[in-house]
Every structure is written in C-alpha cells, then in structure tokens.
Length: 512
Ligand code: XMP
Image (tube, rainbow, N blue to C red):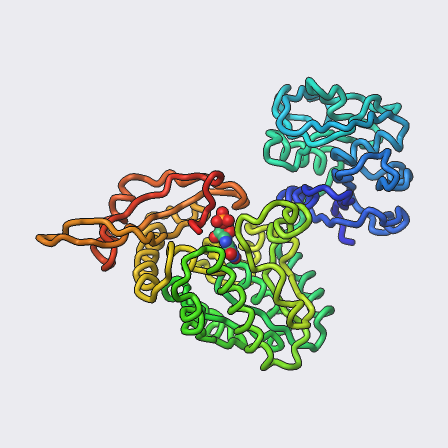
C-alpha cells in the first residue's frame, strides 16, 4: 500500500464510509478493510494510522467482532470510535459496562484540550452519540480526555503510545469539532503528510477496471447525469472502444438533454454511443396514469425492457456498468432497507440480475462532490459535471397527475428558463437541486384584454448535503420576480407561478 495511508477497520457502523470521506477530505489516502484481516497482513500494508470504526455489537456478544491485541503494540497510532473505543478498552484491560439502553443524539462534551487529539477545540461543544455499552474504567496508562453528563469516559487517550478513542462520532457533522478532531489525529498524533489527490484515485481505478474487464465488453446506460457520465468517462479511459453506451430517451427529459449528451460523448469524446428514442412507447404506456407510484413502476419496467433489447445487440458484453455512488449504496442496503418505501428508486439493482451481466460500479466508494471533482479531472464539461441531479423517471414525477405531450413541452420550456436564469445570476451552484413542477391546477388570469385559464407552475429549489433531508432555498425576491414574469411571458400554458417553501421532511424534494 502507498505511504501516508490510513486503514479503517470496519465493525459494521453505518458511518464507516463517512470516516473514509472525512479522511480523504484531508487529502489523506484511506481504505476500509474487513474486520477479520489478520494483523500480520495489516503489518505488511504498513499503514501510517489505523481507525477502528463503530459497530452495532457489544464486546460481550457471543459473536462479537474483535482484533488481535498486537494491533496496539505495533507503534502505529490507533483511533477507536464508539465500538472501536469499547474494543480498545476491553482488550487493553479497561472495563466496559454492558447496557440494554442506547444513548442517541446530541450531547454536550467537555474536552481536555491539552490532549493532542483535542488541541485547538473549545473547552465545551456538542458531540453526536449513538451507543449502548460504555467504558467504565480506562486501561492502565490511559487518561480520560472528554466527558459528557451521561458518559464520564467519553474519550480516552495514551499520548505516549498514540492510542486514542472516542465514544461519540467525530465523522458525523453534528459533532461540532468532529473535523478538527480527525485532522488532529491524522496530523498531530500520526504526523501524516497529506498527499492524496483525485488523480491518484483515477490511476488506481483505471488499473483496476482494466484488470477486472480485460478485453471483454462493457455496456453502460448513459443518462447525461453526473454519475453515469463520470462512470462512462472513467471506464472509457480504461478500456476505450470496448465500452458501449446506450442513451434511452423516454420522452421525459429536460430540454435539449439528448443533444448535450450526443455532442459531448459522441462528437467530442468519440464514444461508442447508441441513442434510442423510445418516447412513443413510454408515453403510450403512461396515458391516463396519474398515480405517482404507478408512473414510476411503468417507467422502470419499460426502461428495463428497452435497455435489455438494445443491450442484447451487444451479445459479447460481459459487464454492465452503473454510476452507483456510495449514498445509493447505503440507501439500498440493510440500513435503508429496513425502513418503509417512501418512493421506489429504480437506479440501483434490477437490471443486472435479469441480464446476466456482471456489475461494474467504479464510483461505488465515492460521494457526489468527489465524483464531480473526478469528472473535471477527466475533462468533462462543467455543464455536465456541476449539473443538479435528475430523477430516473424524469419529468413524469414533475407533471402532477396525467402526462401529456403538451404538458411535457410546457414544463421543458419553463424549466429551461428557470435553470438558465439561475446560471445567469450565479445562483445555480449554490443550490443543490432546482426545477419546475407543473401542477394540474388551472387558474384564471388576465393578459392584455383577455381572460386566461391556464396552469399553475411551481418553482422548487433546495439546499442539502445528502438529499435525505433538505432545506428550501432562500431565493432572492428580485430573482423570483424576474423569473416569474419571464416564464409567464414566454411559456404558453402557464399564467401563474408559485415558489415552494417546504423543507424535507415533511415534504420530499420531488413532488411525486
Ligand atoms: P425525494 O423526492 O425522494 O428526492 O426527496 C431525493 C433525491 O432523489 C431524487 N429522486 C430520484 N432519483 N430515481 C432517481 O434516480 C427516482 O425515482 C427518484 N426519485 C427522487 C430526487 O430528484 C432528489 O435528488
């Protein structure tokens, strides 16, 4: 493994990849390794530091996950987080108290700022707790370096041996000084040199893709969104013409979407790209349907059908590539899988099992901002790289009620004006997602000397980190004024514009 790298041992916390992200934000390379990796192997990897992640178990469970004690004797700095702290305490002779109840949520912690882990912190600040068991007695040679009202030993450290542990989660943004604590561990405790950049990720990934794919062919559904575009550019760099991209136009795309994709990927980059216009079939099947879930299901099913048919032309393909990102992985995994279905997302799973292809997901470990950075590095135009996300079912979930060709046209025109104006006023990149929604409501208006009776259009703009929660964007009034009158003047069929001021929850980002 490369120099200046941190190994994160994964005890199954839903936050483990977040730890990875925080480390990489510090330009330090980091990898997650499975819990049963032998210490002898870890030694060979020669990491500069080790992090033991949190996890749902107790050190007293029959099937508890552990590690050889030797890990603490290699002279490599170790940070235990939550379960990682309990494990460190348990293995080094401290005492862990089993508990059936959980402490969950924010807690005010007092820090010993003379500890190198907490250097530069306020004496008191908020941390994020999520644990059952806790440490009752620290091992010999350790000191208590943080406490909360409910948890006396909220952090412990042994400066000489460079062993530290925190009961709370520094990787979660609710821990106010979380970033600082992690960077203290990396730089002050472990003395790591920050030298990891996205270009090293690109080189490693290209190598990995070449190794996995060999001289076989890969199919990829290109949507024009950031994720599939970046995945395509990366795979193309690795295997060139053995990548076949298929772009399915379901007739519910944004204005000029197909054209942008064609110009970028076919004309500029010279990809093998098949453009498929299946809009007639989609619109035919959506006729008369106004239930949101029904629309999604029809689109998902039809998409698979069309894609499968197109892909079967490439008989010798062995892989199906998808631009799955890490947040898609958590939402669809055990963590998200136990919650009720709010909306059916169809971009993860489904296709590959049916098509008997191996899955290739080169962006699976990355977060959206990292993917954008990667896209820029691969030379994709800013127009694609900084694009707001667009849902798979497209405008179908932004036309409330029944979909008609006329409504699609109206919405495409209005949306293009809204987005253009946001770009012109430099608001676009400050917003996480913005779009128009065409409501089925018609209201009375007056234009010149005439009475009008036309649709109400809603503008939606939100700011969010992860799309699981979102705040409505505080749009400047002059902008709203300008864009409303421009839309009404230019788009036939709309005579009233409203702005959505609902956050998520209780609303969702999309209206359907
Ligand atoms: P919601 O409306 O669930 O949206 O708050 C959160 C984010 O997910 C996008 N979204 C989808 N993306 N297929 C997708 O690929 C879908 O069916 C879908 N539904 C919502 C939405 O645009 C927002 O970014």
